[in-house]
Image 1 (cartoon, protein in one colour):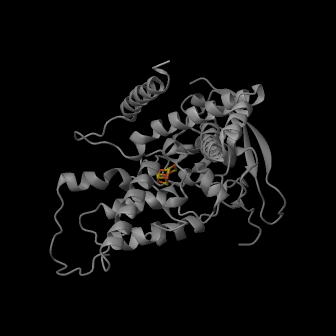
Image 2 (tube, rainbow over the protein chains, first blue to last red; image 1 turned 180 degrees about the horizontal axis):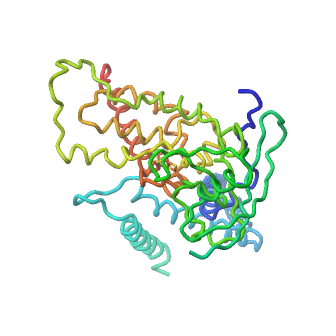
Image 3 (cartoon, rainbow over the protein chains, first blue to last red; image 1 turned 135 degrees about the vertical axis):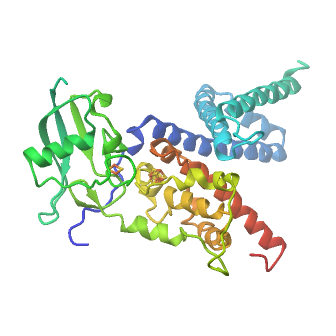
Length: 129
Length: 246
Ligand code: SF4
Ligand code: FES
């Protein structure tokens, strides 16, 4: 077509709408989840390398910069989880009656289950202390 | 009804001149009962007849009057100026489409995507043309929501994935594919799912969900795409476990 002005996605598009921003943060949360997986894998590698390697890796993890970074990363992962819980009822509407369950109810149920399971895991790890 | 003046800041692009699109300001009188399309028509009738934009029905049916109003894709015939609450109303062409002139975009690409999902009833054998294909209210209900699509393309303008990967089949074409897959008279589900179960099909969608937010007909294309992902996976597994299945 002569002299059409081509479609271009503007830089900073994700700052123009709060929902785009939330989406981008969710995606970053996905990358951070993968990073956590790598940390866990490295932990296992250090464990197989022996006690001193394992302990020195733990010491590194406990240094303030890593702890602060962890706090930020943890925020992203929590956001990732929450936004996906928000999407479950929309992605696969659950139909018990003629009308599907509203997504907010599915979201609420997922949140409750998440807290219960997380509480159980925390109790299993720290309960005997 | 009381009149007041506001500014319409409208994108201008002259294909013969080329260059980048620019903005032009028009100060116009508006009333509370005016929609954005009325404002554009006021400019065309009284201020600048060269301003170019599409419209037809003025009642949210034809789907031709879409534009980015204050940064969000909307039907200009369904957006009241008073609801925007602004002294400057910005009207731009829909994002993610090439601009032909001013607010008019080229939607050939969308039409090709739509054609690729075969948005019509497919039957192996039409049999007796005098026979009726009976449908019950619940059969209609299964695809009614997706059948409300008016091809306004607001969902394409809202989708950042369309912006990043122009080959993505996109929201409305997917929703219409589901509309025919769910039709009890149709036998073309396998063909459509084969098209959609590709890199440029439904798997490109990362579920931003903005398409469903801006859709003026509550079609929920984002939900339709997730259902199609499920159906495509089901078909893939069936073909894996039962070679020869469609
Ligand atoms: S799905 Fe909605 S927004 Fe997209 S073309 Fe159809 S009516 Fe318009
Ligand atoms: S003019 Fe037909 S939908 Fe707006």
